[in-house]
Amino acid sequence: MFTEQDVNFLNKKGISLEEIERQIENFKTGFPFLKLHSAAAVGNGIKTVSPQEESSFLNEWNNYCASNKTIIKFVPASGAASRMFKNLFEFLDASYDVPTSDFEKKFFDNIEKFAFYQDLDAACLRNDYKSIKELLANGNYKHVVANLLSTKGLNYGNLPKGLLKFHRYANGYSCTPVEEHLKEGAIYAKNSQGMVNIHFTVSPEHNLLFNQLIDDKKPVLENELSTHFEVNFSEQKPKTDTIAVDMNNEPFREENGELVFRPGGHGALIENLNDLSADIIFIKNIDNVVPDRLKQNEAKYKKILAGVLVEVQQKAFECLKLIDSGKYTHDELIEILEFVQQTLNIKNPEAKLLEDVELVLYLKKKLDRPFRVCGMVKNVGEPGGGPFFAQNPDGTISLQILESSQIDMNDDVSREMFEKGTHFNPVDLVCGVKDYRGHKLNLLNYVDKNTGFISIKSKGGKELKALELPGLWNGAMSDWNTIFVEVPIETFNPVKTVNDLLRDQHQA
Image (cartoon, rainbow, N blue to C red):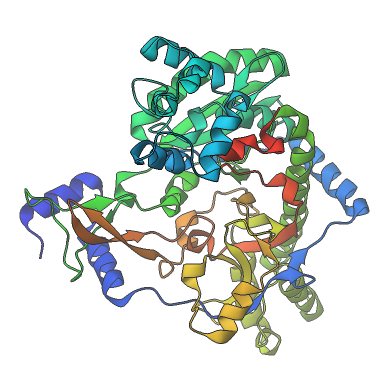
């Protein structure tokens, strides 16, 4: 199936032949659905925080920040913004020339409210010698859109979201998501030395633009916020690309015979995350940012999540120290088991039947793992993975964030669980990635490789199958200790379409 040229190509990408053969087998067999136990809900896997607990967790986090610990804010930022402008691209290709759909009308009726308005106006004057108002008065709506999306204008149709102007402030300054993430990080991720570490994952073609933006804005923000920012970037590794196959599950090839590979999806970023050396890592999507007037409230809940993590992880560390000391009683082991079952929500009816030696091995395996605390918001129709209790390969039942593709919708019980789910995951995570000795855990050891996704794409007019690796907060973190905490919907403000920027929470 593979030539010597293929093998050399794979070697350059850092992908083994065994890995490619495993991926092709995945195409042939598909991925098994996860066996659901129940949907997580408040009182059943989702924790609510009382006002008294809020104060306790906030203090816990503030004390942690004052210690000599490493904190990193990790922001996946390589995704293109093209989907944000899907409706406007369709307008450019439409047979009509004036706004017709509700989306188009809303965009043009409110165009002055966008943070990029002044830049767009300058682009229109430069390319068409007319302002936006003049072009619209003459019915040249498509000229305005072309100046927004095309390379001759702002090129927003080809840039990543992180580089677009999202928010405009009263002083006329317009801010990108990258800048908003830095300002937000200064509120809840500052260490004892007054430093904020932020890591963005970017695509190779936009790396220079991100660096230029940071070089330009970082000194200003450091002076304004009395904070030092350590900003780093990484790119998705070539070895995380996945092979494409044709509809017969044979390797898909270019006309010159070269194998075709595709990016492995956000699950590939577990490699980037694994390269970071930190005690605690915040994870948040690039487009989920708010203007300054809303930052303190949003940051409050980040701190609460982090406080929950610190408290639970510290308890787990104490349990592990006791176990490793060998100076424990059977009753103490049962107390640790109750912590695993009740606080970490790991269900295993057989555990109490284990002899002490077997119970110790079981408890160590469950405790000595990465930890994550995930914010969960009430389901109001926004897209996102759902919180479930699911069965693991070892037979235990634990909390997982699942996408609909991982659930057997032909099974009435599973479908009902999914449809009646009360909450969803807004990608709001705080992660503990070191063991109690302070050693960094190898996050690649906790990935469930049987939880990928297969989709149908096309290239050169021919259909192909594409494989996405287990999602970053789905299968890539399948074997982590997981706690779900309810947070307000106000903390989730994604920008899926350009008109989302017209929402009140994105108007500074």
